[in-house]
Image 1: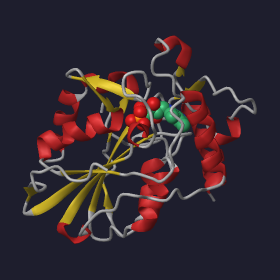
Image 2: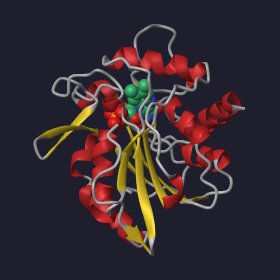
Image 3: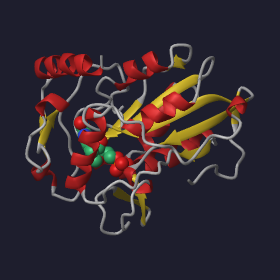
Image 4: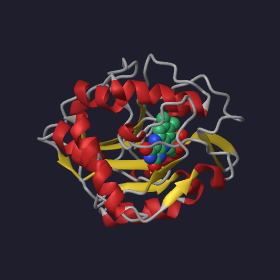
Length: 255
Ligand SMILES: Cc1cc2nc3c(=O)[nH]c(=O)nc-3n(C[C@H](O)[C@H](O)[C@H](O)COP(=O)(O)O)c2cc1C
């Protein structure tokens, strides 16, 4: 099923691709990239490029656990902002790691940076999706490790858990694109929780393939949730400057 989807995505990506991002051309600092699993190179070297996905209707530019504001409400419901970032799932050194971006002088994981921006506008509670897996700090090793996890359809054990899910009606869920899909930890996350009757608002950081097919995947995994297709996606290179775009996107959603 998943493999079939990947083949479909490859074909649609090849047809739709208008741009190829060569990692080496990006200054070398943010040295993570992926490619669809069938296109993976056999060597231990990470693939060097992947195509832009145009298959979603996402917005064009659109354990930490909770922050202390109690998850401000919109229309009386509490908001949770769940996110997964490699930076909070590996033993990496914040200063030297390519998994971080610098916001106001502080190094944070890119998904955390976007989660903070959403928190700023919505007052929601932050929730870091964390696993017992210590992901490799080295970018190339992480690429290979994630490929293996995806091939095995792994479900990394989660070590952070949402307390009292009932209090949240809206859940922002943020993840990086890994190999044209969500990290396997997100599959563990969607296995653990039933978001029936809740609204899921996806956000994403990528290096060319945007959401890929992940919004459709979330809809399949949570058929009784309302999944907002106009999610926010941003290139890893633009995260530090994304606050205005995030606020504008949220404004369009009524926040
Ligand atoms: C294992 C791995 C696979 C990736 N695969 C893709 C991909 O298929 N498409 C893409 O656009 N970016 C890909 N990327 C780039 C990430 O989406 C991007 O670096 C993101 O900012 C990572 O977020 P984080 O640093 O907060 O974990 C990949 C990165 C990693 C580490």
